[in-house]
Image 1 (tube, rainbow, N blue to C red):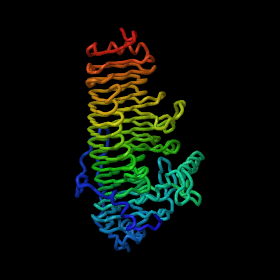
Image 2: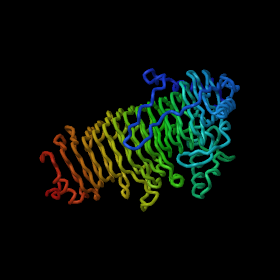
Image 3: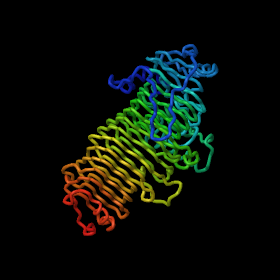
Image 4: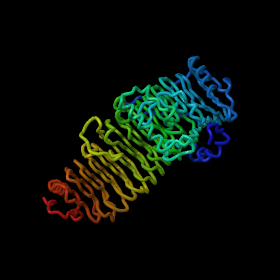
Length: 553
């Protein structure tokens, strides 16, 4: 595809991405925003209000012919709307080709039904470079397709569609030699250059990514940065852009609702990312993504800790995800911290992982007070997957580089046809996952629940039905309570206990008489742990299996 590709040439490639099943169609009216009743202090977010003025795109020279670039018309209409004190820029029905669109304060960009905004795939249309946060690090890069900086009261609304046409950009993430003879792993080399700038403490405004010898990074689709009162509502992202789709950065009071996001097939085409942002409502969205569907982040490593801005007070509700790496994802960029998250009444079907929480040594940051409730999952690889080993790294002393996971609550969650594991939790030996509570969890599939390097784990009415292996497995767990959590009939082992750091294991009202073996201990489990666990059993003794005399009291 050459850099002057027209809409007509694109049409064949985007049809499949733009098609929408009738059962997935979004409602045609803007429903009232229901009250937020979060388990933490959270403002009642409402739509920003705009003056009753309209600015029609065609009044500023725009042409819906599929070949005319309307970048200047968008700029003029938005500038006029802002200068008048705000209002609505109306994009009528038709196909509108454009480069970067920059929003301004008090402007609602409204896409009428049948309006299609098609973004150019020529990198020159996204210059000059602007300040962005790219994968957790600040730099000067190509403008996002939709961009806003330091704005108040902005929106993109309506029943129209937007098309990112990211295919040409995607080769930048690939290894090997492409049509432009770019060499190998070009984007990885750009990352190395950016990392060196961070280490050298080069100011963000001087970290220029597109240069004469380096094409830079793929731009995001939609990125408001340092903005307050932001609304995205009603429109369809019908074809993926170059990189992440929606990324709220350093924002406050944001709403993303009633969106249809179809970005499956593109590399790193996340659905909605909430990044170092406070007070966010993500609701009633249908997301079929090429990476994480809904993801919360707060900066990467050294640069993320320098900025030090958490993501906090986020509500995700009534969303449906299809393909994607995770339904609701936390991390792996956790350097600024994340807290106060409530995801409820969502459905994840065919998504790789339902709930995914990830970090690693070097990221740093405290992730705490996460609540997940009333979720359904089908045909996922994992129901709940928590890891502090997102990438394998050597052990190191505890420092600001060491991340913290604590106080995660999961309640009323069902998952069927889990392909790999119902629940998988892996902490760091030096910083276990702490204060994990699972209540009323029902899952069936390939494997049960596995918990490594955790402390103060509580499982209440957790009903897992694995095809093979133990129902529950502990390794190096410092405190675990299992209450009213039974074994299915025919399970090989109900509870498998391993690890020299394991202690304080309690079982209360757990009927595992259906298991072939009740509780088994590996040789490395301390004798005192075995003895105390034996004394806490509150079920039929005949179901208990221990092959070590240290289990005797």
